[in-house]
Amino acid sequence: MQLLKEGGFFVWPLLIVSIIGAAIIAERMQVFHRITKRPLWEYQVPTEVVMELRTRLTGLQTIITIAPMLGLLGTVTGLMKCFSLLGAKTGSYRPQEISLGISEALITTAVGLVIAVVATVFYNYFVARLETYVQEYNGFLEKGEENAEKTLGPQ
Image (cartoon, rainbow, N blue to C red; front, side, top):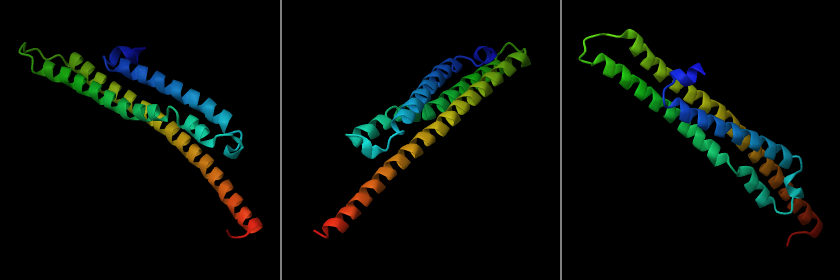
């Protein structure tokens, strides 16, 4: 809760992005686990299965892009607060308020980067697993064609 309090405005959109990312990751884990139990060649329409596996990966990629940007936006606003305090004509230097602006900047940057790193790890996992799944299917099809040529001869 302290991070939400000290992180400034942009920590809230980051919280929303992280919740959406976690939901996508949890849902994709279930889908991948359920679908990849069976080989792709056992499904009636393999292209639909592949499309189902690709679903929401673009959303995860978007989170990977947006989270650091939101973090940097929080950094900019936090530093703007610091510089406005330094440039204030009141003549009083308030190090505590300046340090709060710097803290806000660092918190939002760190939160944005953590969200992006976690989302990237899972995105790469899903993409690699999907590629392997499709490559196994392609290998199965190639073996089937080779066996057909051996049996039927060149056509």
